[in-house]
Image (cartoon, rainbow, N blue to C red; front, side, top):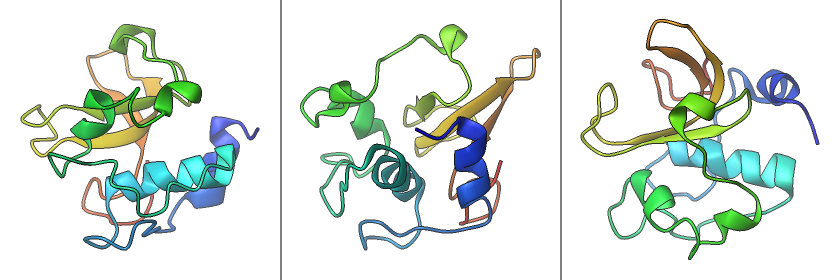
Length: 125
């Protein structure tokens, strides 16, 4: 399995539309990770149902089978390579978001690798 940095090198600046819905979204980046790293092709499976937002990944974690590949951890226990999911209505992601945690900045903020963030549809950190 590649390290988080190796995954970063593989995808940085690239955009993936894994499900063919709404263009390049943060969820497509997560799906690309599942396909490229885990060998799990989620494809157009509706992992954002019923809300239409990334928050549904967390809400339906076990039903969608993510517990076979991922463990839920508290935000203060995340390590490089863990995936974070922001709830709808949270700051700074009012519509929810999913991105790979890279590091804690030590000031209440962190560095995340994801798609459709910071004004870029492609993977950006």
